[in-house]
Image (cartoon, rainbow, N blue to C red; front, side):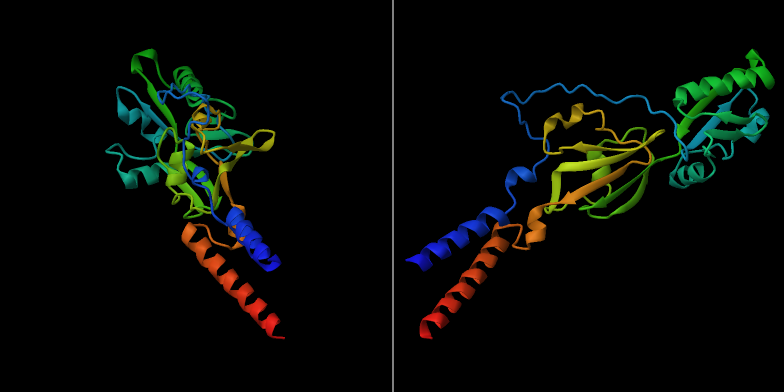
Length: 264
């Protein structure tokens, strides 16, 4: 009888710790008490402010484009994939002092400015030093790709560059191969750069309210870390089939051991 109780307890222990619950791998669950599936999510993204090591693409247009050829490192034309790559490598890098060096205009501090504010500053400086109002200056400033790094329990760990204005956490993870079943979707860490240093933020990707988080949209140079679930460390199996195979193996071992002891 004692042996039967021991076996039953062992089986229950393995079952309770081995399988990964369905709720731990489903995204965007409605964890509130509301039953209405229609929800309005208010985005919390703030305008991005330029940091050290960011790379900017600056395009200047006037009535006579020959007058601004020196400012535009890449030629006019369709922005296909290769042109996007050239824009990234030929952009203006923000140095450790927060400056970029623009032909004819010299150094300009852009640290902590939004791209819209930089457009205004460049336009004002051009009007002051190079052109008149009649030149009809039009300036666009964009980040030369959004670079981030994902590691831990993701399909393809490493650094990735996306040529998009905005990228949310789900898009960022989808572009590095998705989170395997052994990844902890409830505690995804975002390591973000700030002027005063780095900070770690945490997101629960299984909760639909994550879309209201100020960290829902990633920023350049973010690092995304997906922790492994404890089941991976246990090594007892992540699916029902794997767990059943483990249990059968354990029961066979215990049964054999008991039989051998009885024969002694």
